[in-house]
Amino acid sequence: MSALRPTNDDSAIWDIWQAQFRLPVINVNAEVGTFKALSEAALTTDQLAAQLGVNARALSMNLAALCSMGLVEKRLGLWRATHLARTWLHPDGEGYWGYFTSQIDFNTTLRGRLLESLRTGKRPGDAGETASRPVEWERGSMSQEAAAGIANFMNAHSQAPALGAAAQSVFGELTSLMDVGCGSGVYGIEIARAHPKLNVVLMDLKEMATEAQKFIDRAGMGKQVSTAGVNMFKEAWPRGHDGHFFSNVFHDWSDATCRLLAKSSFDALPSGGRIFLNEILMDDDYTGPFPAAAFSLLMLVGTLGKQYSLAEFRDILGSAGFVDVEAVRTGGGYYSLVSARKP
Ligand SMILES: C[S@@+](CC[C@H](N)C(=O)[O-])C[C@H]1O[C@@H](n2cnc3c(N)ncnc32)[C@H](O)[C@@H]1O
Figure 1 (cartoon, rainbow, N blue to C red):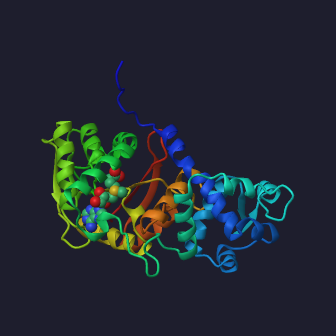
Figure 2: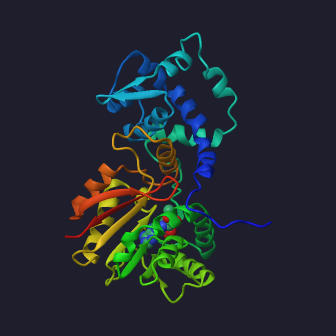
Figure 3: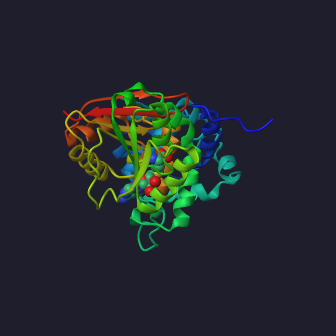
């Protein structure tokens, strides 16, 4: 009669949580004119962005969400409104539903943030004269209280995919793994538990490494898992690991910063070493799926990043010198493990 242990499948909870993105993204795109424009003509993302006066990168993230909801479709690189959107979301149509969806919408905070980021391409608060509100870790340091809060929320959302990642046999081929940007350390801890011969170091900013140590102690994994307080952008990377694991780290950063991270990892790994990126992947043609597209909208309004596709990761990792880029879906949720090798 008490709580049950986590499993590797929390997709039903993800679906409930991500449902909050569905209505605001429709309302925002009705407001800027996406459905009307794509009912009149087939357009590329750049053409549509120019016509609507919005940011093309942010628009591509919105279109992926709309596409995965069946409201727009992409063929030969051109976007079109679907039959559904032309019937119910064209503002000049008899069936226009927008009067209702826009007035009976209680999630105005997210709607406002999505609208601002679609117009500016930036996280709300970062654009123009308004105060910058970078997430805590972008400053390179944070209060212990902030670190504890972040570790807790990341731990909640990472437990199931950590079990999924840990089950992958490839970790049994390594001797030492560094979990870069570890947060609570749940991934490194579960991977270590599943592979008892593997040595794991949880690496993060020093305040977060302190929090991760508490999770190690709680899990009783101190013999196999330790921590390192390192700023991955400003300090030398620890050597001696034949694997680097990043979960939900690349999605926080721009393409250019991801390339820097990939290069730092490449330089610190020995020949034959492996890099792993645990992420919810966009489809290669950037048309969904909804869990990735909705998560990408969260990155748009809250970070400097987005959800990447495997094609984008292959390009980013390849630019650093990695080869053999591939991905496998892990567990019952939405995460995939991307891996590549240093020749
Ligand atoms: C989205 S969280 C991911 C946490 C964990 N990997 C997970 O998936 O649950 C991103 C992590 O990157 C860390 N991070 C951000 N900037 C960093 C830096 N400069 N050096 C080291 N870690 C950093 C943050 O502190 C945070 O723990």
